[in-house]
Length: 499
Image 1 (tube, rainbow, N blue to C red):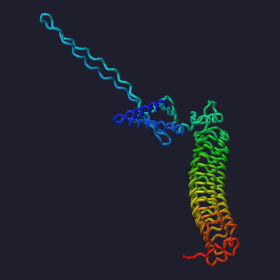
Image 2: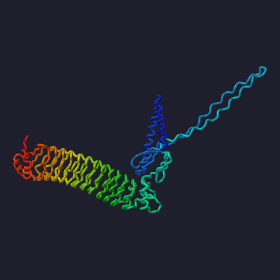
Image 3: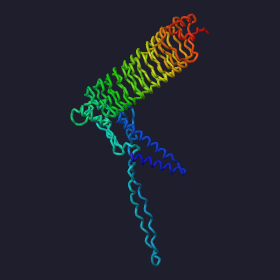
């Protein structure tokens, strides 16, 4: 690193000098670009090591060798340049003419000067333009030697499947725990072969101060992550699960407050209750199509979870599955979902858009309670029930499109939806719950289509906008004014007009 800082400092000095003198800086810019490229290649190499990638090919090219990793990324390790021989020395100068001899005799002719000596051999060529000095290609791995003397070892593709070679762990605490639990041959290392033989990790890592476990993907005999396997690993940032896993147990990653990266294998079918509860740094997750249910408290308290991909095949979004996911802004619920349980999106305060499947028949109690950013909601065609408190305190809700099969609107269903200005009650509705539209302070128009007044709960339309009107079919005006609780709003009830 000191060498890199020295190079950068040299460039800065050169630039400073150039500010006072007019000169061609194209060569300097090329050097800067070259340095940037070399740094990027080292970063690619280090990322390959951290991500437990393998080398799939090393191919010679004019510049050196192109190394390709298992994720498709590449680096170029460049040749050095040999020095050229020095140029031959110049020919000696001609000797001076002899002095005049006595009595007119001519002096001897001067001798020819000595031949010039061979020039010095040229300096050794500079290293090729890379911070990776050389590579050693072995039978099982490739060793990269950096210019600062550090080495990075990457396994060759496929070698780890049955290899006795040790796994290069990113996190030493993780390595120590793995060695203590599964080092069969006693060499104080965990080989790929030993990892592949593990069938259960139990609670080996529960509460441990591990930061990364990318190497878990080599535990290819695991079919399940046990209950509470990583519960309370508060420093765990990243983990890679093996493709063989089909079940992730209850509370497996609960209270992993630092967890940011976890990829769910495509074959996962079962997620346990509270599996990712309070993973407060988790920002995005994709649920495989093989998962049919998001269980109780699945992502409860994942405060930074902003992007969720739900695939066809999902049938149930469980109770409080996304409660208090404060950053979640938009959700598309696939058509396969037939049940969203209570409090599923409770206090998702950034949730602005949600697309509900047409086959959904009910919105359970408190499903969208305190979704303060939600602006519009369109009820699916098959829906019959809006549960108690379903949209309470949705302060930005401006539009509710109700469907023609809706029958029940629960207690407190739209209480304190302060931006709602108009609502239409379909003819199919038979009951409207107590306090269902109370404190909707902007509500000025309620359009009721039923000919028979629906059962109306206490204070359903209290504290609406001043002069709020309730429009009912013309032939039903007197029925509404005389009906229980509707009579409390008799002065506001008027006949609907056509046109």
